[in-house]
Length: 98
Image (tube, rainbow, N blue to C red; front, top):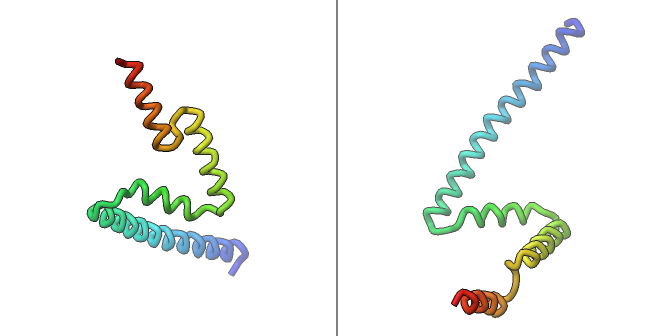
């Protein structure tokens, strides 16, 4: 076999392996979609489940940093706080509107 023939055969092998893996990936994606559908039919919030899965994939330090940044941004936008603080802000708005 010539060098170009070997390269073509090798390339074909890579392409075929990738195609098989893409088929497997499509099947797995369909399976995952089915599990989410089943969870949703049981009353679970799939958006929250996806968020939990994303958080579980993260390293602990990265997850803590992301949560700290989220808390910081929420605080800057007046979206964070304790339930009592949130009630106070809500009550203050009610009084201002009255």
